[in-house]
Image (tube, each protein chain N blue to C red):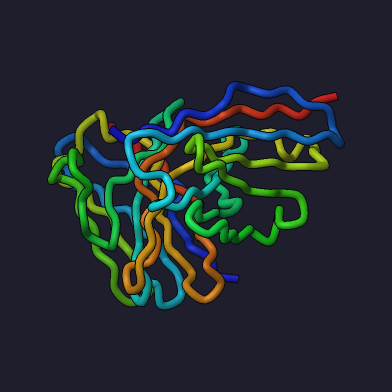
Length: 122
Length: 108
């Protein structure tokens, strides 16, 4: 079965960086994209970006574009999200999710990881 | 930028039909998905491509999308359906993923 297992919680100081991993299993990793979504405490879902493991194509949300980098390692079926210059506003639960996309059908996000809590505090 | 708008909350009595809307300019021209998120859990896909249900999602969940509004309908609502629901669409011109602000469904 499809599983996305994320790395553990992180506590970071303002101004530092965090890198979250997302290990996929149960499907052919290059055949599906990975998108990252975060959720601040008590808030809604905020899309951050996506990456295609097939060709490393990426697309980032304008709000975080200057600070986020998405990468993948196809040898280990793992996706990574790195966010730099952290502030308290970045405190959130970070999710990775699998998606498929095809002409005429748009993007379908079908499986989500368990989430990684990132806390930014001095 | 493109915005998806949902009502913050919807209430329904057990066994009745719950309707959650998601509005956006010409949303009917795009495909919409819906996610259910129970407290402390990751989101779960309940509707994709406007009206398709993933395997394992009960038949009481249905979707529609036309004009400026996508709709998630839960027939015979059960206590276990109490959750936050998010609509999602795809902007093919920017390749951005769009989420609505979420709707808290209360079953009382």
